[in-house]
Amino acid sequence: MFSSVAEAGSCPMKMGQINKALETGAVKNVAMVKKLLAEGKAAHESGQHGKSVDLLLKAIKAGGI
Image (cartoon, rainbow, N blue to C red; front, side, top):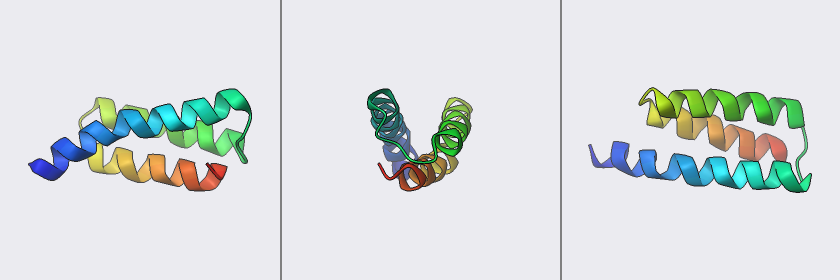
């Protein structure tokens, strides 16, 4: 239960980090990052926080963020 709560709290921070990088144009592989961000957001909203974190971390890595 605690890992789920911790993961749920980290999703918005990761999404914010990605969005900020997208706004400043400091992102490689923009299309892939946007796709992974959308998938991560959807997973977060459906309560799949572990999956969301995995997708968002992939977006961060792919974008060089």
